[in-house]
Length: 444
Image (tube, rainbow, N blue to C red):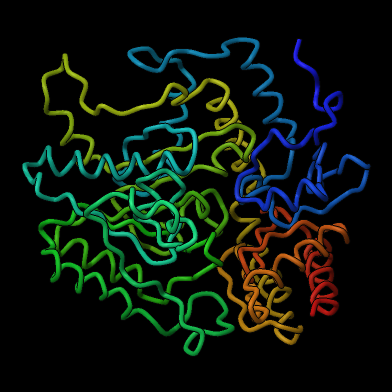
């Protein structure tokens, strides 16, 4: 039997290589969460923390919701796993029907994945396969957006536009990918509430790429309706509508990455509904199971699916899938989550909370170091002036101080990010932003 880390004198945390984490700093001063319930975490030393980020954009209903917990417990005792290739199980078909019924009109199909990253890559592959099936195999170019985030698989990373995510892997990114410019301009947009009035014209950057590559060679454009991980970049009024018009003009599929924005985060089932813009493909994850089980989904308009169903019936139409696509436990968690959303009127509750969230967020305008605040739905970002020679250090310090004071937020570099529970209370919002203000006041 191998010796334990305690017997060898090694740090027992060393074996786990943590994602998107400064591993050495964490393992020198770990922040361990051992339990969660409702809107609170409990640390391993018994401290209660208010979760101001609802998991990782994931757990809008609160942690360990009893109905979802019971659904997963019952499912694992009934059917723990079923092969998803040439075999199915009832709950995943029920879930697909529920999701397509929630989606904008014309969406009839759902392909299941295990994460937002897998959903992004799946959407890109479906777009390429669709054009080939339609006799337009020359449409191979994919367009993303600067500062966009579409996961960390090679497809999503290639169309993504966050430099730090791409830098080390740049030589191996997909060829035939280009990016339109991002939508953020501090001089023109600072401290906007909701959608900025300036910037709809930025969508016309897609015309530039259509002129450069010829629009007939472009397969798809993928964007987040509200860019989340890069620091809450809200689309200008009319911007998404303009992208839709340009994609229609050039025969380009429009993909909305709604991994963050779906399931109530912007007060509607999908941001496509909130903005009144219907894409061709929607990717989802996170809130689909309230973060209880890993799951993602790609929702597709009927014409795309039908184009791929013209091959002989004895052949596989799309050579793509995952061992755990539509896993029984994930399907049970998702079905229960959707039921809770309906029973508790969650999306309407989240929409009604938006004004209070906006006021609490923008009240930080006079706090030290704040250079911008932006928000949409229950997504908020507070941008701090970077510390000279140490970008990101100030945001990380505020995150640490808030954690020690009993509130969990997220920092993406020097942008403090907020994603409260869809059923958060005014008192909880007050606690979050009072704690942030106090942390800013003591941060150099």
